[in-house]
Length: 106
Length: 121
Image (cartoon, rainbow over all chains, first blue to last red; front, side, top):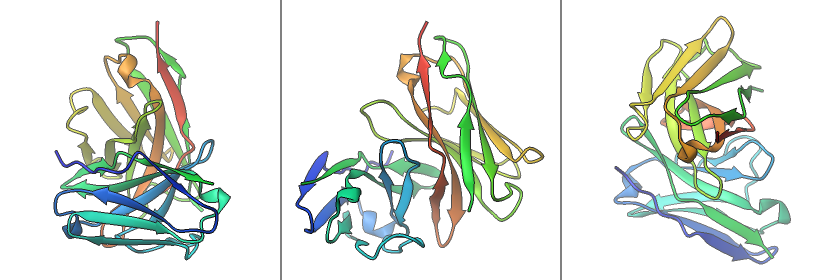
């Protein structure tokens, strides 16, 4: 089965840039989506198909995907960005999530 | 704005069947080409995709759970459901339902807030 690997945690200073990686074999040939999980809230889609932002998601969130790594970038980090982030793709008709990254804003 | 709400027992005994329902509002399960999905997150662990269903009844399941999972849809009630048989403590998790949308590829664009299910005697 396909595996997606993310760093367990990441810290970013307020106003700085956080880059969350998602590693997988030849992931650049797949479409990757990213989700934000905050306690007590419904999970939110922040990036779909590698680099597309849904309506309502700030431009500070961007995505890229090439080779064996997909990346979610959060620019000008805010306190409200503190959350878990998961990458996700489809392996045929099976949904696969990354291992998840806890982002702390200092 | 589509909204999803999970409902069902918060406590299930070991070896029994876990049953949850997801009620969709603000949109029809019968419209479009969407799939409807279940996802779970055990405490302190990551997200795990359980499966998805189309309004036609077509399903896809996580191979690791396939033998125990059934997802069904009731378009008249705008609901879809999850049954997971022979549960153990490892099935204790927050269970989410979500809409799966196709725009070039599939992604989960609307989610419920999740419901905690504990497996314990």
